[in-house]
Length: 264
Image (tube, rainbow, N blue to C red; front, side, top):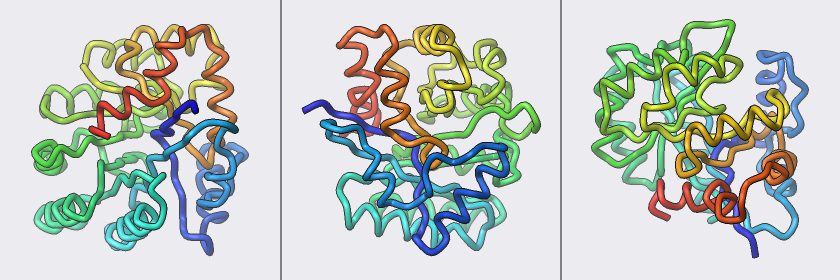
């Protein structure tokens, strides 16, 4: 059976899932394909493919960090298909944020998700550097939302500063390194040694442009991602599977790179 790791998904507790998904859609002026529930994420896996999912939810407020992390950990305990990525917020204060990183690492969190635009933090803020360094020491990669033409929080240029400041950190730049600002991603991140995921590539980019960017970053450095509930896993799988990659390249994109990164 074919294998797939969807490296970029978000699920929410059932009572708030649809509202949370709608809020994301309102922010980006998009119609959500998914409803934010775990049930729909699992139901929309590609047929005949053994799927696992990196689940995350960047806490927009300090008070949401611990309950959000506990929810993700509980989901992973209940279903081995889930790979949990936790969160922190600088408004917790450095000591509390460091303590939470330690706690969730011990509890089984496999990485961290940061969404600077939702969390209203600059990705290269000096206050975040000690937290990034601790994640690196604990072997926790960070999946960063990167890019938004309407804000300055998460620009590829700021992402590059983080890479240069904390070179030991394993960085995944979501959305091929720069949602809606892919030219900036090419300028600042192609040689940064980071991973990127392919979420928000198709349908925002042409097939040719999506393929070109993936190959420029390097087939060994790109991870499959849907950004559920924005899109469902089977939809994005169809888009990426249709691109002219070799079978070996597809294996890397769809699961091998993720397995190597997370030591699965």
